[in-house]
Length: 341
Image 1 (spheres, helix red, strand yellow):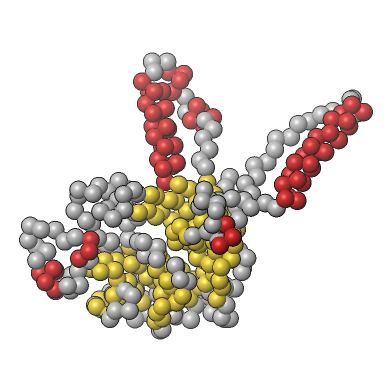
Image 2 (tube, rainbow, N blue to C red; image 1 turned 30 degrees about the vertical axis):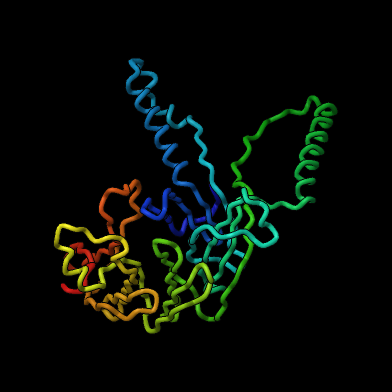
């Protein structure tokens, strides 16, 4: 058990290898009401690889008893993860880890510590941000009590057994308990009653977040400066997804030739689906104009594949795409990445 709370969202996010970044990293997050758990992608891949190797060894074994399905259930595999409490400003409806952030000024010397920035949206606080630390950050008193109390309890328990030897002992199986929270320090908070934060969408780099609220507004948040840099109004029940488009007409017209567009040729955009208006709008980031308006039927939905692992440097760059599920026909089409067609 990770934490006894309903899971609101699963988030898979990663950074690909490219000419600028030498390494790739992936993470898997569980978003719960006021709680966020982070798993490293490499740990999950190692676990799956281990299970795959064990399954092959069992099936290759000639002994049929070794192929019992109970063997898989009895294998105790624990994946390391971090758990944080981000409910200081109330329950959250959505949250995300935006990336790694520098440590506080008083902890610059602790270079081995890694800090993350988390942004949450909810009913009590439209936007709240936290600095997440891998260190649990217990105080000196808490560290002493964690050592003294178990030892004292163990001594009393042993002494009581000597006095009441004939008392029946029925060992109880200890209940599974979630691990203690790591340290989450609040950074900022935006409260504007009765406005409530509803959904949060991250850009591929994690530097921008599109947040929808209950009053039909869409806020574009700079997750590094923690400042709202843009605001749209009149978009109730809207949903947002980031995508990449070829805005330059010269590059878009030559995209059919042999040379493939590079990553630098694409521009980050935000696709806004306004179901009450029956349209999808594509806006250029950060402060660009509206590039396109697409009509869509009732019940349509925007979809986006999760992060594609294992992208190589030699393969052509695949831009971030957004797909449209037609509410009437059920057909799926990709939103055009160029402005000419």
